[in-house]
Amino acid sequence: MEEKKLDINTIIGFVLIFGILIFWFYQNQPTPEELAAEKAKQEQVEAEAQKANPVVQAEKAATAPLNIQDSIAVANYQGSIGAFGFTAPSEGTTVLENELLYLEINNKGGQIMEARMKQFKTYDSVPVYLVKDGNANFELNFSTSDNRVLSTNQLYFVPSLSQNGDNQVLSMKAKVANDKFLEYRYEMKPDEYLVDFSVRSQGLNGVINGTQPISLKWKLKGIRHNKSIQYENRYTRLTYNHEDDKISKLSEGSDDEETEEDVKWLSYRQHFFSSILATKENFTTAELTSKNLVEKEDKAAGFTKEYASVVPLKLAGGELSQNMYWYYGPTDLEVLDQYEDLGLVDSIPFGWGIFGWINRYIFTPFYTFLSSFLPFGIAIVVMTILVRLAMSPVTYKSYLSQAKMKVLKPEITELGEKFKDNAMKKQQETMKLYNKAGVSPMSGCIPAVLQMPIFYALFMFFPTSFALRQKSFLWAEDLSSYDTIAQLPFYIPFYGDHISLFPILASIAIFFYMMMTTGQNMPTQPGMPNMKFIMYLMPFMMLIFFNNYASGLSLYYFVSNLITIGIMLVIKNFIINNEKIHAQIQENKAKPKKESKFQRKMREMMDQAEEQKKIGKR
Image (cartoon, rainbow, N blue to C red; front, side, top):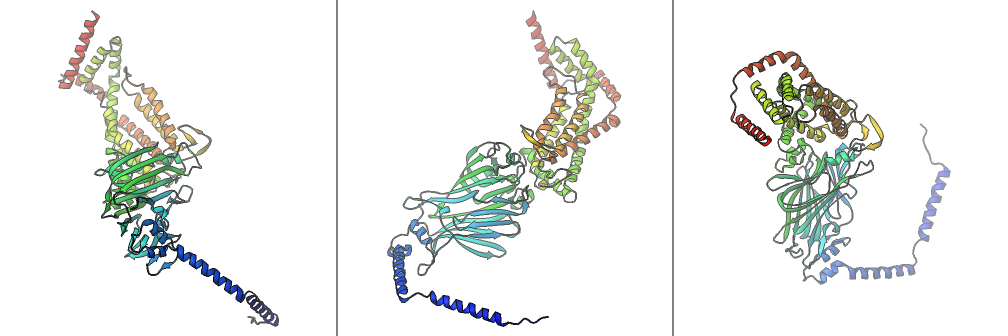
């Protein structure tokens, strides 16, 4: 290796540079006259600063109560103020974060200015933000002892980070003095989306007007996360717990406002993610507002709804103390179920009544189990097969009723011709035939009614199941949203600007299913719907409206109808024997049939009506 040495040219260069620096230094030294002028100017500046210094004013009025305006002036003084111990805050932010959540808290206002989910992305691969770029505001408004109104978002808070075991603790204090302040305290635990949050005051009982409640105001505009803003907005709602754990919601599709009492938590849900403010001691009242920001499908739109809440906070002994929680995270059963004492899981839109119960305790855990070892699309197929097999006895009952009606069809047609000019008599004789044959026309409807809770629960499950979010299957990129095989250059009302394949397949399957069933229904009676019309209407409705729904739901209906068709073919060809059914009906007709009280009463009423009709014709 060649050894590097300094040659004569390098040495000369260094000497010249050093000489130039020395010359420049001495040339820029001030003259004695300039030094004297600078000193006089500095003394004048210091004198003016001393005169305007809020601390000097506070020292002059040390015996007088310090009002909040003086406190703000002192709090904004730059530097450490020795004898008084005031700390002057400044612009800046403080970060709290764990493996799941990133929070950035602003010194001005002490509020969260950014909330980001670390493990999730939007449809276009951008991190999921719930708070960003001023879309949210949290503030306390209160009256001072001299009846002036102040807002905390104009105050500067002094941050102090510490540890409480494994927890990160951030204390934000808007100080009047070391022992007089308003404090926001955030405590973040490892691997949790829930953050403890408390607001308290100390030594401000002479500053805050104790006769007026402090007003907590929380506003947020929901940031778009999905490819269809209309679809996302459908599941974006303000939900709240009040009056002994009653769950209520503001309107889904229009502007709405309510005033409620005894509120436990407020949830600003943004489809799959939620911003929730909960409290240990319920808010006495809450004024709630939801404004819809989506009028039509707009690829450039960035927000779905604008929420606002106004909550009064009570003072105790002239001081404020309110213990709360912030939740920024997924609207996921598995996560929210961890906070059972707060009841946050009830903010998930499972559906109402028995439908929600089926969703929460059957379908969601069952699908979570299947998807833990199966691909997500295959898990839907397996769940569909198992659901249809479980419902196969109901399907059998329904098909058996249809088969009996098919056997009676010739006799019912004959009665129709015989009494075509007397609708009441025709109805009376038809009911007698049903009674003798041991057939109930309602027996085919009851199985369908029994299946309605299952259908509706699944209708709510697929679009809101967090387990399906951004999970792909075949051509569908996201089973919780619609699939797209072609993009249209225009927008069709109710249908959209795209073509989804799963709804097309589901519509074809339901069409063939209805072809199999409508032919066996009872003949069309006056007042009954035209079954052929329904046979075409149902697939068309599914094709139109399901084009914008979750592809997982269309996949379920496609597979479900295929399985149902298969089950009905097995029942028809291998289980039900039409000749045996006909023989059984004839045997039933030959037996004396004892009328129930209801049947006897109905017969008597129809006989009376018929008699009155005859009298009227005379």
